[in-house]
Picture 1 (cartoon, rainbow, N blue to C red):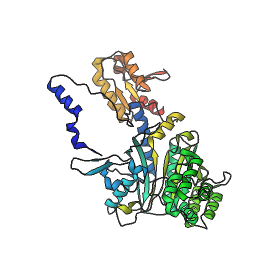
Picture 2: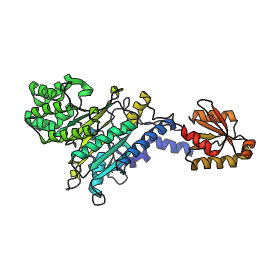
Picture 3: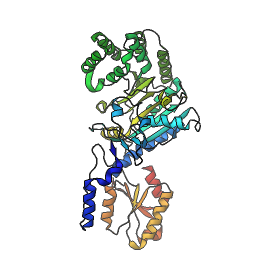
Picture 4: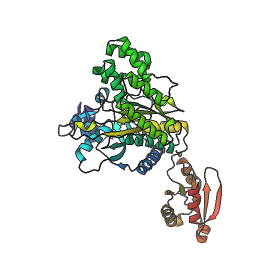
Length: 460
């Protein structure tokens, strides 16, 4: 635990003060913390494109945006992440000596939000929240200590319809991003808990679930060894492995029947999953959903359906969207029961996947649609007015600001992935026409009105 109020006494700060006093200029090394990174414009533009596409899709389902603070009281965040997650929270004392922490996900702060504002919102409540979270885990490829999450939830109702709508929105979001080859792996924590109770290991259910959650990372043998240590029985460990490894030939409903039998008998959870599947079938999207009992989700707060999302063309990247039902999450902060179901997309990992797969939704990270080339300095005020006019027509427009040669202006446009350049000299100015050049194909079209320029850019 660190105390930010003690920074003034650090030796490096004192040395900077001494250097300033002696008149020497001190150059601070421009470095970034381990597990953190800067985002250059081309990368950030692509990320914003994904965010805007997802926001439009969420809004089409009636979801609304919210936001919560980066910092919460430590006691608010602890206790529902569970195990390893609690250890990864960034914690410190603020200037008032209060224990505070940076949010490690967007779900636990949402539970606190619900308890605090339950009388100000209307249930069922549909929200989405896209923002940064922080976890002190070991950085590796595709994993950072600071990263973007995109959450969407339905709270205040416990129904198969709500479960289905989250799944439906997950699927439509990936379709919108040009990722049609996606498989959604779903399971039910309640059904797994019923199986563990029937097996006589319910007292160790939390640790068993966390161990099973490691299956894709450490493999069956390592999981078997850990389960044997947990349950004290090789036979029970093998029974658990048999539960989470169904026959590949079995379809969704056949697997569901088998899991229900292993859990002892027909369960209410079985009926719930059948109902959800019937809704997926009615929507014509059931083929993309696989019943996979090895999906448990390591976080403690899930109580019902859980799911993870895998890209068929890039399985090595792991799950890019996961979540489930959490009917008791808000119970830490309020006596009212507020059931919920939701999902979270890891935007950084998703962006990496889109780039690797060459998804058509991503542009080259262009800063504008068109660059207005300044051919004559005497016409600069008019060039700015042209830029304003194009913006009013819905075109992202950049007017070149420096006094440089035309060749250097074209180079500026290409470096910023601006697809078009608009030129207009004195003669064209007098005639009220423009020349539009496509910098990708080198095709040039002259004698255009400003409206025609906008039409050609929009058509592209």
